[in-house]
Image 1 (cartoon, rainbow, N blue to C red):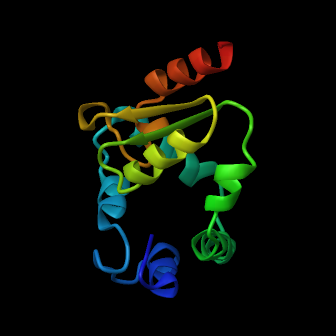
Image 2: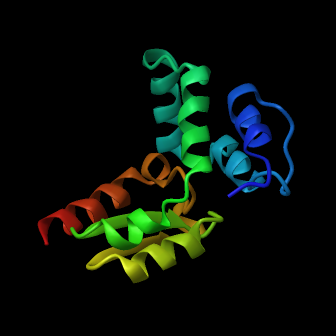
Length: 138
């Protein structure tokens, strides 16, 4: 996920410079891309009503980055799982692996034309909600 957890977290929390050797810079580019009217609306809503604390976000991200979750994913998940990602995401290979080891996993990979990135639930909420509802109805 990163070659320097501290620098990656600083880039998320403080906007410190980062390059592709530290973190997937496409994540930042796609976050900033206001190419969906849904995303423009959701970002305005979040800015108005949800107050984020970068210090707590950094702690959560550090915990996420520093742990190896493969044993949990491979051995502990027994219920059907829906996973969503997109072609813009660097996590497609890890999502494919998770789908291969979790019984009854469903993997949804959105193409670039459908805003397939880390923020697809905000950028393409109608498709995302439809896919999630169809999964839950199974």
